[in-house]
Length: 385
Image (cartoon, rainbow, N blue to C red; front, side, top):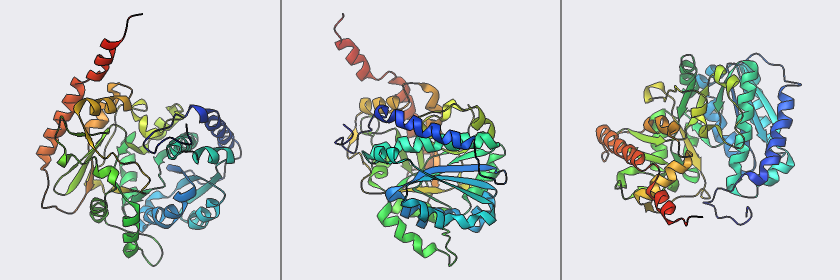
């Protein structure tokens, strides 16, 4: 199954679960054993970086984190990276000199048996992300720090961590999501913003516009400006409206930009689930940044990332949304708050009021369709035993 599944299929983690649990257990022994000496951090960042992710991570992601504003805000912090043998020296070379600035690099090797599992199907990367994220959350809780869900394909604005540090003092959860850009088009554009010292500083609105002008086909398929609700909808739980000077993104699964020390101590392990799919289980209250917080980020993705080519009807849309959250209303608050990616003012756009009205309509239709009509149809077709 995992060898031949098409790219739009999410392969079940059950076959890999024993190896995921072994990797997690071995790393937990490390975290509670010979822990590297370092100043107590205010935040721990973690993610796996392996294979094709390594070069873009060290050449573009890391430099956007190292603007003077981000660098000063990050300290003191720990960055925990799990990588493969070929990636280890590249990540080390890109990041080991940060320690004098108060940034401790903790570099760990992904076991060979896990690398073999990750290579079997593209969707298996999510199980690797889950282990690394849960380990980062556990490390944060151990040292009384907060946690940031670092990703190997996210580009940060120049004051992102400055804004995050400010928000961290008043929030248990800071959550946000964003749009995905075409990797092959966006990464070359970053070179013009590279400082002679190596860091990359792209103003928030410029970074957002860069993504908007070079959207990955997956995000382009989710644009609601061309949809016709309720009968012509994106086939996903991720919706994007283009306003005059911002992209309004709504999703029930949002990235954990910040989990407070209290949350990190109390949260259970969620393997093989990634943290963005479990935020309602951590705390009730959360904050979604606005453009004035100066926390813009964008994702970049390659051609192998699946893109939904067609719009779907209301029932198919509702079925996909409710299935993504296990048919519980716990995730509705996250679906109701937009993440705003700032862009340069556009001539053709939906007004903020029109976006709010259409989103409210979609939300009402989702509630009315729970459980979706297709489930009722299936139940009526069942033969009594």
